[in-house]
Amino acid sequence: MGRSFRYVIIGGGVAAGYAALEFTKKGVSHGELCIISDEPVAPYERPALSKGFLLPEAPARLPGFHTCVGANEERLTPNWYKEHGIELILGTRVESIDVRRKTLLTTTGETISYKFLIIATGSRAVKLEEIGIKGSDAENVCYLHDLADATNLVNIMQKCSGGNAIVVGGGYIGMECAASLVANKINVSIVFPGPHCMERLFTPKIASYYEDFYKSKGVNFVKGTSLSSFEFNSEGMVTGANLRDGRQLPADMIVVGIGARPNTDLFTGQLTFENRGIKVNNHLQSSNPSVYAVGDVASFPVEFSGDTRRVEHVDAARRTARHAVSAIMDPNNTLEFDYLPFFYSRVFSLSWRFYGDNVGEVVHFGDFSGSKFGAYWKNNGSLVGCFLEGGSDDDYVKIAKAVRDKAMVVDLGELLRVDQKPPLSPPIRGGGLKKPVYLWCATSAILVAVFAYWYGSMWV
Ligand SMILES: Cc1cc2nc3c(=O)[nH]c(=O)nc-3n(C[C@H](O)[C@H](O)[C@H](O)COP(=O)(O)OP(=O)(O)OC[C@H]3O[C@@H](n4cnc5c(N)ncnc54)[C@H](O)[C@@H]3O)c2cc1C
Image (cartoon, rainbow, N blue to C red):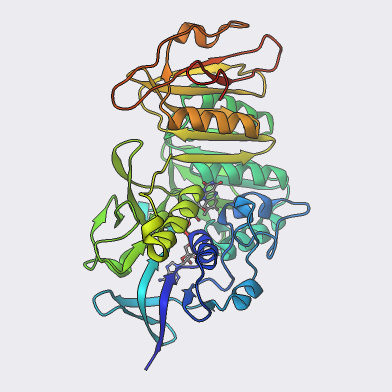
């Protein structure tokens, strides 16, 4: 006979931590909740691994970044779970699960049954072998997904100071790792097949700003080609990379950031899937009513864009986790999940946020030779997305609100005019009340990107 818990969370990452906090806020009793994680530590803020954790000086270390410090909440140390009567089963993998019988089996041979299950298994890094390249086993080839990877990366960086690193991939992980490698005095070449970095989110103009910034720090961009194989020494260490365009690059270490895959194998054939994730309704409930999915694995309806999405970002992990717990413990007071896509990154002295969708017509604003600029996207006259580098907290609150409201962009010509009062325009009705929005710059060197609403008050 195994143990039984009313609530079980599989996975001990970001979503699990935020779910745990929400369970306590909703009055979970001691002994009712269990978290099973194959990582050896209590849930932590994963984004710290590619930022503070990799710094050469005063690096972030646990317990400093346990959840939920990322949302300015309480920090949930292992002791916190003990005090709240939450069972943390760490270093233990869930091997199989039977959602019909509501039981699961762990690698330690324990059977655990539940009344409600929350799947928070996140994703894993895509390995080079999955794109046909051998070499992941080499000691100086690094990935970055969990604490063990980050610790390994720090050790390898320390051995390679003054040497050459090749970063494979120009997305989030590649760009953030490249910045950290530079901070650790390592020469960086970043290789990716696309025309510019962060291809799915950045416009060419935005990308060019960041690439120039990285170049000013010595980073070498190798674009429009990809890795084809490695060169190894007699000890099996990678010494160089062969690229598909015939070029060769020397390497003392490699960092691979070529994407992630959701950890959903346990549920194949048992739950409904969409977008490679577990399909859930707007209460994060899967096709089995006792099973909820949150974080990277959840494919949830997004009213803002009218589709179903899986979002591999920390904000979605936090929000879906809180919402699922609320839907389970307090269903009568839980509204439908309403999510505005939100992404952010911090590298070097730069920091940007993006809200909404990058679809439709894009308009850049601000001074791209300065420190504050951005772009917004409009679709059928409405604001649907906004990117801002170097904004203040207040700016970000304003743009998030304007995007959420799908504010109406009245006159693009007016948007970037200086010292100009926004022209009045009547609100539009139909499909909800839309508010006209204006963006304009102050004449001073600093761009002040503010959205002003004529409707209601002048300033958001
Ligand atoms: C290095 C890095 C930096 C990032 N930086 C940013 C950022 O700056 N901004 C941003 O928005 N997002 C960022 N992300 C993405 C963000 O961290 C994820 O979207 C978020 O962690 C997802 O939360 P989650 O709880 O769904 O999954 P995770 O946090 O990945 O947690 C999943 C947990 O489940 C465990 N698990 C999986 N399978 C099993 C099993 N069978 N049994 C037991 N345990 C299991 C895993 O080991 C892990 O502990 C970053 C991700 C990484 C890897």
